[in-house]
Image (cartoon, rainbow, N blue to C red):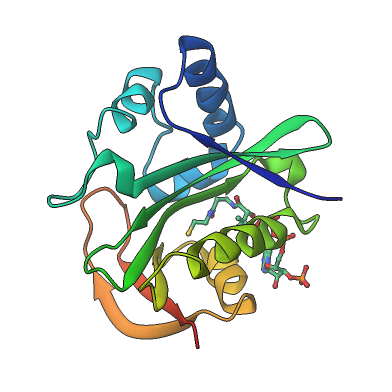
Length: 169
Ligand SMILES: CC(C)(COP(=O)(O)OP(=O)(O)OC[C@H]1O[C@@H](n2cnc3c(N)ncnc32)[C@H](O)[C@@H]1OP(=O)(O)O)[C@@H](O)C(=O)NCCC(=O)NCCS
């Protein structure tokens, strides 16, 4: 199986509905990490910069729909140059439940990494993983991410967030 990343910049209502559907396809994740999935308005807000950290512009935020076998199977979001120019942060990576465990997450990350490595000046990629999201902890470690030892209390998450990073040579 292969996976394709389609960048979404200014989604139509239909695309917002499709992204919402993808979020509803990972109920276990939202229940565990944030309590409930985002609503359509919240998703529309992502594309208006609602969750964008200070100092970044919409051009630094990349949302992708993940496609396999002509189906939307997931989505991811990445911030370029945050919190400083040499870092990229993966904010979200979801594979819908019925497509999990088939290697698609690994393939999606491989495509993402190709993109990130081509960004001039980016030396590391990092992600905050909710400490209670045990499958995700294994997933990122299997891709070469290492725990930095930093922990954060992000009010968005029900549990503490552990920071993982991967450096590029
Ligand atoms: C985490 C997630 C992105 C992984 O994608 P996936 O397609 O299911 O994972 P893959 O099949 O590509 O697995 C890659 C590796 O991750 C690890 N892994 C994946 N699922 C795992 C699980 N449930 N338990 C333990 N390890 C797991 C394994 O090391 C696996 O390698 P292997 O197949 O050689 O054993 C996906 O399961 C998901 O969307 N989960 C819900 C949302 C989420 O938690 N996102 C991450 C937020 S930080």
